[in-house]
Amino acid sequence: MKLPEKFCERMKNELKNEYESFIKSYDEAPYIALRVNTLKISSEEFKAIVDFCGENVPWCPTGFYYDGKKGNHPSSIAGLFYSQEPSAMIAAELAEVKEGDIVLDLCAAPGGKSTQLAAKLGGKGLLVSNEVNLGRAKILCENIERMGIKNAVVTNMYPEKMEKLFYEFFDKIVVDAPCSGEGMFRKDSVAVDEWSIEHTKSCAIRQLSILDSAYKMLTPGGRLVYSTCTFSKEENEEAVQKFAEKYPDISLREMHRLMPHRINGEGHFSAVFEKSGERQAKKHTPPITAKKEMIEAYRNFERENLNISLDGNFVSFGENLYLLPNEMITLDKIKCIRPGLFLGEVRKGRFVPSHHLATALKKEDFKRSIALSEDKLEAYLKGETIGYNGEKGYGVILYKEKFPVGWYKLSDGQAKNHYPKHLRKV
Ligand code: SAM
Image 1: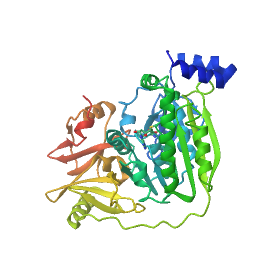
Image 2: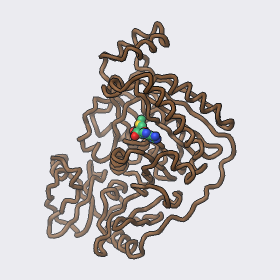
Image 3: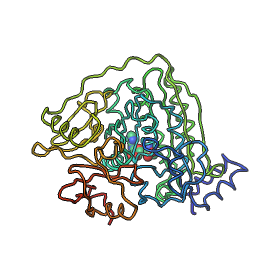
Image 4: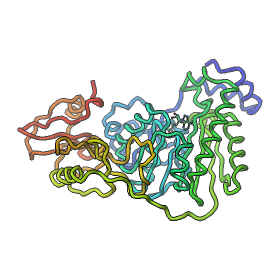
């Protein structure tokens, strides 16, 4: 692999006698891992139902090495795991998120860390998952939906625009900053082509500005994790030091450098900060509420098709109805592309459930379900109709008799396929 000369020079100076083994690691294939989605399944159960789960990733109890290429596997489609570069799993672990926390993932797409943070929240509290790039934010939404996450609000804003709105609001913040990507050279040839000393310097300036915004949004007593996938000291140790020096109430607690010649993973850096002071009670401005008729249409659907009654703040945008987590502030001035759980659309007074609602609930929450063999599941995922005699109404198709994959609607002895067209296998 052809690496930039100046990069090699710098690494040689830093690593000295370790340099040879560092450079050799670029001839090896990158490691691939998966993270079990504990919102849906435990690691033990997952390992029992698939045959591709390898060794544990040392710094992530729910992470396992595997050979990759399982994006089309039904267990992936059912949101039971997320494919993630193993080293990238460390940052969310360091955030020490617990159920009920209010968490911000400031640079979130495509969603590796957000889906990991959401699993730690266990469906309680709030995750604000922010991504500045709209195209990437849409992919983030799809991943949040696939993993069945109910309590994530996806925003599409520059960090400096968020500061005032979320001032001292978050218990935990993860800043997985855009960086020069040196740690990903083995996987990403674009990062090699774009690399220059100037680029590392401009990344460092942007990173400090993102950290400034994160500081303002962190509650006193809160925890902030900063991470990059680069080796450049300017973007790592020096950025961290400058940040801690700027804010007297910020203390640096730990730093980790994962190096590809020492561990089974790519290059990664993370630092943990704490902000001194006492956590204040959160102030909540009531969010806007949805039209009454829309809530009624949803409640009718719920009575006919579900065994549960969902709680939260109903919000609507046009025909779309969402359930916003109770902990969220008003959506005024927030560029939000997924305000919590997308329940569905109300068309001419009738409620049509969203795919997100199917992925976010458990088998026992639905009045009707059909467990399909893997062959028939393949046909369902391609959009085919399923012959079935049963009770009329909406139900879900299950993978392994337990995990919801998508909706069907039964009428006249046919289960009409409601698996989203854009997700269908071709
Ligand atoms: N955390 C993600 C994950 O685990 O899947 C990966 C995030 S990636 C390293 C960095 C992200 O920062 C990119 O999605 C990029 O679009 C976003 N970004 C770029 N410029 C930014 C800025 N000025 N402020 C915040 N985020 C930015």
